[in-house]
Image (cartoon, rainbow, N blue to C red; front, side):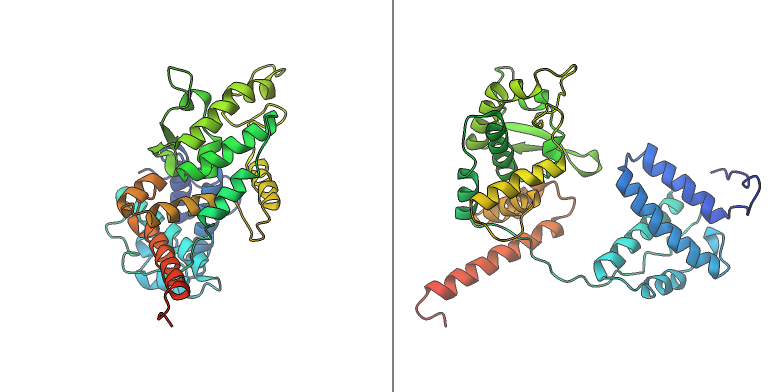
Amino acid sequence: MSIGSSESGGKPRSELERYLEHYVRYLTLERGRSRNTIAAYTRDLQAYLNYLQAKGIEKPEGIESSHVEAFVHGLDSAATTVARKLSSIKNFHRYLVEEKVVADDVTSSVAPPALPARLPKALSVSEVNTLLETVVGDDPPALRDRALLEFLYATGARISEALSLTVDDVLGEDLRCREALRVRGKGNKERIVPVGSYARTALDAYLTRSRPSLVSGRGKPTPMVFVGNRGGALSRQNAWLILQRAAERAHLTQALSPHTLRHSFATHVLAGGADIRVVQELLGHSSVSTTQIYTKVTIDTLREVYQTSHPRAR
């Protein structure tokens, strides 16, 4: 891989800085990472390079595992933040190895800090039913809101996945919602998600009776399934507000987000007897270890029910 010349004027860039520029270009053009992901990687790695340069290290081959460990141990941040920054560093070093800039990955022996086991917030089945039953009415916004919330709970999709769906993604040849849809998740990876009958009914009602009136009057209608009251693509903020209004009507006091319905989907499917590998595929997790946290949620729920229900549990 060729290295560009020094900047004209000012302080010349080090080799590490030039490789960081190459890496950012690689993430953008070849890996298709989002703008937010690129910005986070750049911040993490620039801080890492500043640390190395303060140590007099300006070339990749001058970095040793002890330097990485010292940088990580010196971070005054939460364990999750340290783990994220180390992940950025590890990915950068793997890139350097793949590009044959260096022979070995000096970060392979550096372990991230132990993360606290955080349980996802999930609603009970009855709470989800109450939430959905508060979204009633035949006016266009109500039909849209019901379709969105039904879809999120029926599929476990991320809100970004739901909002990126187009009408062509959803409708079959009979102009009705398909029983299984292809969604695009993190890293632009695609997966198939089944859509339950309640969600399909809600989507069909929205697409035939609500969406046309919402997009009418716009010069060039958006192809996105979920649209706002003015006909443009529905934003994440407005999706959050839709859920908040439904939660208020359902008298649910805990903090909710669209991701809560994803957590609830996973917890309820596992509690219903689904294999964890199947749930991993449904959620689009790259590793089953990410999905396993929902198993703990289910076990905790079973333990709580047992202790409150069995006469000799205590």
